[in-house]
Amino acid sequence: MKKKALLVIILVIISLCALAFVVWTITKPKEYEPEYLEPEVFEDEVYDTDMIIGLWQNGTVFYRYNDDFTGITWDTADDVTELEGSKFTWEVNKKRIIHFHQMEINDAIIPKAYTITKLDFSNFEYKDDYKVEHLFTKIE
Image (tube, rainbow, N blue to C red; front, top):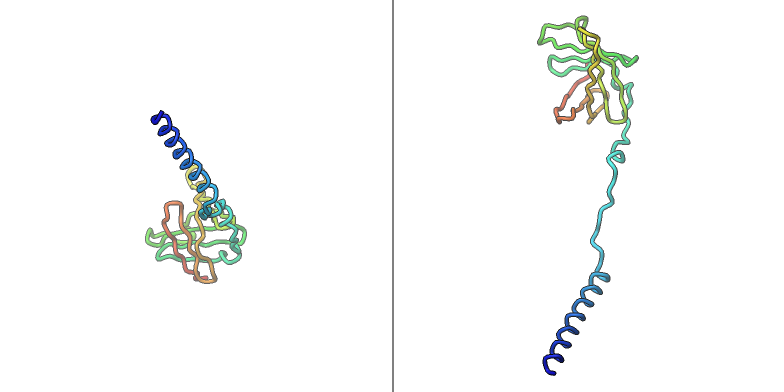
């Protein structure tokens, strides 16, 4: 009989502990859970394409952006002039600029996308998906 009473007491104590744990988890203050924001929320910055138009330089590399969304690039270190440069078209979508380079051999078009990090009247900075930064200064 003493064993049954002891077993009942142990079961009551375990039940009370379980009940106390359930009450504690229900009534404890909630931890702060930050709101998840979709990546698009951060991409609402829009750049003025008129600020891109002109001639930009980074060392020996030059990019000319025209107002009809065409452009040309050349590198004087390769003994290439503007007249011999590679042609491309370009577009801006929020913080992304995409160059569509036109290949000379088979007229293939190679897109290269970048994220604009800075654009003002004298500086144009962007990086590619590999985090390589390109820093240009406006010269014209």
